[in-house]
Image 1 (tube, rainbow, N blue to C red):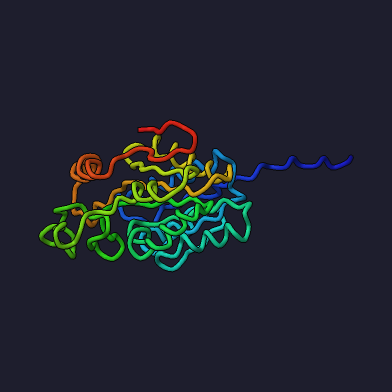
Image 2: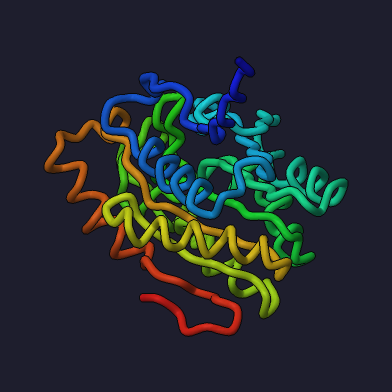
Length: 252
């Protein structure tokens, strides 16, 4: 009797479940979950090249079953830009924290945005440098106490927090997608992530999503205080919503 051929099983990208490496209460896993679900729903797993920065974001280097690369601090944007230029068919994702994007990597971020590089940047904003102990970052709020601002950030001497999406929206052309989401509203955040990826898939231009995130370890907050800081203090300064959508009405 002839042996019947076995049916081909579809590829399964979630091949294993394992604990993540982030601190308890960290917002990075929530942002990464939104990115991962968006990638699966768009069925682009085989096309994605995922780049992550130094800092807490580097713990995402093996989070996905995707082609991934870990870059030097602040250099994720130009690395993914180079990969995309070498192979325009890939979907290039640059994943970083506020330090990697707005401090050491700010020049690369600004120039990629003004050149309308067809990549997607996801930036996690938790208002301080998480991995190195909670020092003041470009996004630290006025009056916020950190390891290097023990009396609270004084805008008169250290300036005001960087408004990244507002900056990117101001310097990009009409084909850019720019938004700010929050881990306190994952449905909205995932919609923004998908729109950012779709903008690249359609060959329009630069896409940027900032995600307001959590760091109770360095904030020194309990559960109630953590969510209050995110949903009240951070959201008052960093307005959530879409700032630029090519050819569409913005989502508030």
